[in-house]
Image (cartoon, rainbow, N blue to C red; front, side):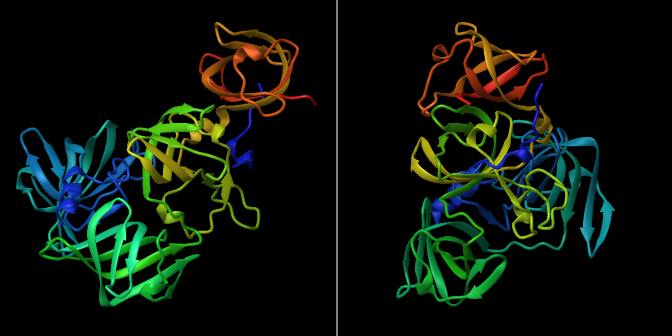
Length: 402
């Protein structure tokens, strides 16, 4: 079996605001551009769909010490606190063990545990942060829809929030990790921005900081995480568990991982990486759409096309290192083609290929084909993933003439 590691490939975001907070807006289950508040801030790190450590931060919305269940403000995750979980109170740097029954709605907590499927988390540690006080500070990000320097207002695509920029606000542009002071008039529709400020009594946001993300950042309406649930290679779209829309890609979509290698040729240290890796020198390695597979965890930067469709500006493959050595890529001659069973064999390979119904099948002129257009004796380039039963799931097969 011919196997290749993926690293060997070099191919290619007011009342409405409160509603969004109640509905929840996380990297795993967002309803728009990234949004966090001091009462409902949380995140799910890489690979959090199932398994792996997850850290949640926020204020307690509900808690039932008898059933050992709790939820956080603005977070859809159902948290079950394990019977042997560490439950502590932190004050002035000291942690004191407490009983779960001593935690109340409104308390600010850090929760650590493991995702057990869906929106459920089994917590092995709960820490109450005693010195936290409620604030009106809010952070939001997205792509600029309109900006009026005279009125000092900004609107964001998909964010129903009135944003007023304070006269003394800090306005900067970030490029390659360096922030440069700019004027509000330098911000244009389409720019991707991070905005921080205080919520006013009328529901508007008075921004005290606006940062334009440029250069290393992708300009898109939405940024979210999700695990791939379905892929149609022929039609160039996929779905993820955190969104309901089809996410389309094209030749302009940047698909990559962060290698963890250094400019001097150091060994690849890891596959993918989270937001903290943006400026740490990790080099992107570019992929083709066909290199993504069901089960991969992705960070997606996408524009809204309509209520059921998104367009991916960029896709970062976050994890799934277990699949690296499962990838198969080979050029060989077809020995048999069974259209009904959707199987193939190759002259020089011992395995049987199962052709995915959404596989990318193309001819010599890059025209779309069906499996029936292939026959024994034809030279083909095949790409797929080795399965536990010894077969290979074919995701791409192109005719070749040399």
